[in-house]
Amino acid sequence: MATNRPRYTVSVDDEMFGKIEDFRFEHRFQTRSEATVELIRLGLEAVEQGKGRKKGEGKKEK
Image 1 (tube, rainbow, N blue to C red):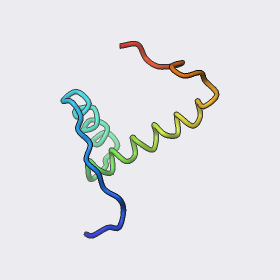
Image 2: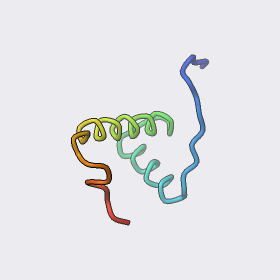
Image 3: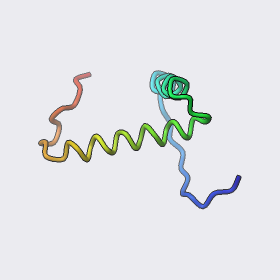
Image 4: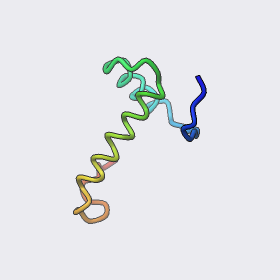
């Protein structure tokens, strides 16, 4: 099915790929793209909610 939406490619490591796949199946998304878009949407919402924080605050330690 053709779409007019912008497209781009993202490369991830094996660990992140596995997490995306787990999210996809746990939430019953039909495609990896749908799951990835939802994860991006959730991340952007989290960023919006945390805009009052200083840069780097709330980041997880690696």
